[in-house]
Length: 141
Image 1 (cartoon, rainbow, N blue to C red):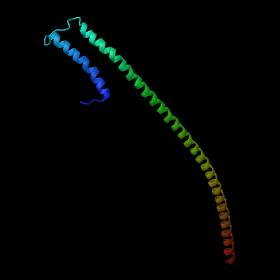
Image 2 (image 1 turned 90 degrees about the vertical axis):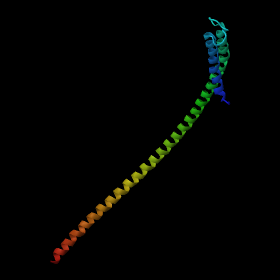
Image 3 (image 1 turned 45 degrees about the vertical axis):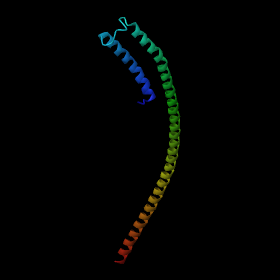
Image 4 (image 1 turned 180 degrees about the vertical axis):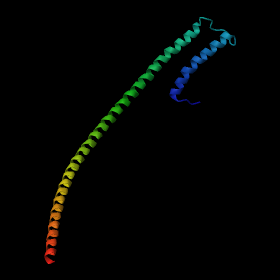
């Protein structure tokens, strides 16, 4: 059976205490010969030994996790800096576009006012022609 490296360590740490407890229980109920009588000095020795070799492995695992967390946080910081730079560039482009839009709107407003003044002049001219036409028609009658 092939185990992942992490799973094999976990399996080892879980299986050894289970085996020790199983042997101890079986010996206490009489299935196996009693080799460790209460106060369970041998059992205490086995668990102390397991704690002695498990502690450095757990510490190495935590150090490895700390290293991974530090690398991950450095990568997050790098990504955040790049994202902030892109946001600033986009904001600058938007500000530039808003400036161009303001200029275009001012030109449109100026064009509208010119067109309105031309239309008013044409309206006045049309009204004058209408008045002259009425006068001319009334003179002809």
